[in-house]
Image (cartoon, rainbow, N blue to C red; front, side, top):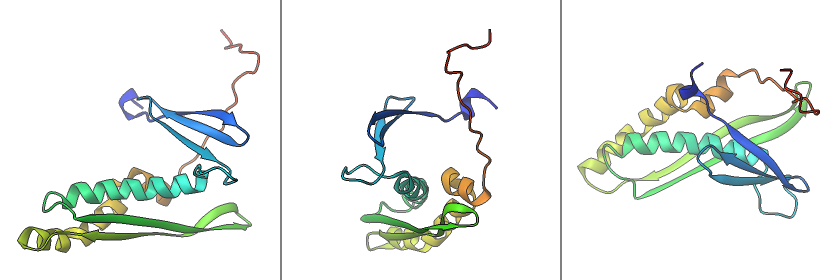
Length: 149
Protein backbone atom coordinates (compact mmCIF):
# COMPACT_ATOMS: atom_id res chain seq x y z
CA UNK A 1 0.00 0.00 0.00
CA UNK A 2 1.16 3.54 -0.67
CA UNK A 3 2.02 6.12 1.98
CA UNK A 4 -0.85 8.21 0.60
CA UNK A 5 -3.35 5.56 1.71
CA UNK A 6 -1.93 5.21 5.25
CA UNK A 7 -4.00 6.63 8.10
CA UNK A 8 -2.61 6.48 11.63
CA UNK A 9 -2.84 7.85 15.15
CA UNK A 10 -0.71 7.48 18.25
CA UNK A 11 -2.38 6.66 21.56
CA UNK A 12 -0.57 7.77 24.73
CA UNK A 13 -1.55 6.94 28.31
CA UNK A 14 -2.18 10.14 30.28
CA UNK A 15 -3.75 8.73 33.46
CA UNK A 16 -5.57 5.81 34.98
CA UNK A 17 -7.50 4.30 32.05
CA UNK A 18 -7.20 7.64 30.18
CA UNK A 19 -5.53 8.10 26.81
CA UNK A 20 -4.76 10.86 24.33
CA UNK A 21 -5.00 10.10 20.61
CA UNK A 22 -2.85 12.30 18.36
CA UNK A 23 -3.12 12.38 14.59
CA UNK A 24 -0.33 13.13 12.12
CA UNK A 25 -1.45 16.78 11.91
CA UNK A 26 -1.05 17.29 15.67
CA UNK A 27 -4.74 17.14 16.59
CA UNK A 28 -5.64 15.53 19.91
CA UNK A 29 -8.71 13.86 21.35
CA UNK A 30 -9.14 11.97 24.58
CA UNK A 31 -10.75 8.74 25.70
CA UNK A 32 -11.25 6.92 28.95
CA UNK A 33 -13.15 4.06 30.49
CA UNK A 34 -16.36 5.96 31.13
CA UNK A 35 -15.64 6.69 34.77
CA UNK A 36 -15.90 10.12 36.34
CA UNK A 37 -14.15 11.99 33.53
CA UNK A 38 -16.02 13.45 30.53
CA UNK A 39 -13.83 11.62 28.02
CA UNK A 40 -15.47 9.49 25.36
CA UNK A 41 -15.21 5.74 25.79
CA UNK A 42 -13.74 3.81 22.84
CA UNK A 43 -17.27 2.61 21.94
CA UNK A 44 -18.54 6.20 21.95
CA UNK A 45 -15.58 7.19 19.77
CA UNK A 46 -16.51 4.44 17.31
CA UNK A 47 -20.11 5.66 17.19
CA UNK A 48 -18.88 9.25 16.73
CA UNK A 49 -16.54 8.13 13.93
CA UNK A 50 -19.33 6.32 12.10
CA UNK A 51 -21.71 9.27 12.49
CA UNK A 52 -19.06 11.85 11.67
CA UNK A 53 -17.89 10.08 8.54
CA UNK A 54 -21.41 9.79 7.13
CA UNK A 55 -22.36 13.29 8.27
CA UNK A 56 -19.43 14.77 6.37
CA UNK A 57 -20.37 12.78 3.24
CA UNK A 58 -24.03 13.78 3.41
CA UNK A 59 -23.25 17.42 4.16
CA UNK A 60 -20.83 17.72 1.24
CA UNK A 61 -23.28 16.06 -1.16
CA UNK A 62 -26.43 17.95 -0.13
CA UNK A 63 -24.62 21.30 0.17
CA UNK A 64 -24.20 21.21 -3.63
CA UNK A 65 -27.97 21.80 -3.72
CA UNK A 66 -28.49 23.92 -0.59
CA UNK A 67 -26.70 24.59 2.70
CA UNK A 68 -28.44 22.94 5.63
CA UNK A 69 -30.11 25.13 8.24
CA UNK A 70 -29.85 22.37 10.85
CA UNK A 71 -27.82 19.18 10.91
CA UNK A 72 -27.72 16.61 13.69
CA UNK A 73 -26.89 12.91 13.62
CA UNK A 74 -27.52 10.44 16.43
CA UNK A 75 -25.63 7.15 16.55
CA UNK A 76 -26.55 4.22 18.72
CA UNK A 77 -25.93 0.53 19.19
CA UNK A 78 -26.33 -2.08 21.89
CA UNK A 79 -23.24 -3.50 23.57
CA UNK A 80 -23.66 -7.22 24.02
CA UNK A 81 -21.54 -10.09 25.28
CA UNK A 82 -22.21 -13.43 23.63
CA UNK A 83 -20.37 -16.35 22.04
CA UNK A 84 -18.60 -13.83 19.76
CA UNK A 85 -17.34 -11.81 22.75
CA UNK A 86 -18.12 -8.14 23.36
CA UNK A 87 -19.49 -6.24 20.36
CA UNK A 88 -22.18 -3.82 19.24
CA UNK A 89 -25.43 -4.84 17.59
CA UNK A 90 -28.26 -2.84 16.07
CA UNK A 91 -26.06 0.03 14.92
CA UNK A 92 -28.26 2.91 13.78
CA UNK A 93 -27.65 6.43 12.52
CA UNK A 94 -30.55 8.88 12.62
CA UNK A 95 -30.18 12.06 10.57
CA UNK A 96 -32.16 15.19 11.42
CA UNK A 97 -31.34 17.59 8.59
CA UNK A 98 -33.21 20.77 7.68
CA UNK A 99 -32.89 22.85 4.54
CA UNK A 100 -34.25 26.29 3.67
CA UNK A 101 -37.58 26.78 1.94
CA UNK A 102 -37.49 27.13 -1.82
CA UNK A 103 -36.33 25.23 -4.88
CA UNK A 104 -32.75 24.69 -3.69
CA UNK A 105 -33.90 23.42 -0.29
CA UNK A 106 -36.46 21.18 -2.00
CA UNK A 107 -33.70 19.73 -4.21
CA UNK A 108 -31.51 19.03 -1.17
CA UNK A 109 -34.41 17.42 0.73
CA UNK A 110 -35.25 15.26 -2.28
CA UNK A 111 -31.61 14.17 -2.66
CA UNK A 112 -31.04 13.46 1.06
CA UNK A 113 -32.08 9.75 0.94
CA UNK A 114 -29.74 9.16 -2.01
CA UNK A 115 -26.89 10.95 -0.20
CA UNK A 116 -27.45 8.69 2.83
CA UNK A 117 -27.37 5.60 0.61
CA UNK A 118 -24.19 6.79 -1.14
CA UNK A 119 -22.46 7.25 2.21
CA UNK A 120 -23.70 3.91 3.59
CA UNK A 121 -23.01 1.85 0.48
CA UNK A 122 -19.80 3.36 -0.88
CA UNK A 123 -18.32 6.54 0.57
CA UNK A 124 -17.95 6.36 4.36
CA UNK A 125 -14.68 4.55 5.07
CA UNK A 126 -15.55 4.05 8.74
CA UNK A 127 -18.97 2.44 8.33
CA UNK A 128 -17.84 0.51 5.24
CA UNK A 129 -14.98 -0.98 7.28
CA UNK A 130 -17.38 -1.99 10.05
CA UNK A 131 -19.89 -3.41 7.56
CA UNK A 132 -17.29 -5.36 5.58
CA UNK A 133 -15.21 -6.38 8.58
CA UNK A 134 -11.44 -6.04 8.62
CA UNK A 135 -8.74 -8.15 10.15
CA UNK A 136 -6.75 -6.39 12.85
CA UNK A 137 -3.19 -7.44 13.54
CA UNK A 138 -1.96 -6.97 17.13
CA UNK A 139 1.82 -6.49 17.39
CA UNK A 140 4.07 -5.85 20.38
CA UNK A 141 7.35 -4.01 20.03
CA UNK A 142 10.43 -5.65 21.50
CA UNK A 143 10.56 -4.34 25.12
CA UNK A 144 14.37 -4.28 24.94
CA UNK A 145 14.19 -1.78 22.10
CA UNK A 146 16.14 -4.15 19.86
CA UNK A 147 15.04 -3.63 16.27
CA UNK A 148 16.75 -6.80 15.13
CA UNK A 149 19.30 -4.89 13.05
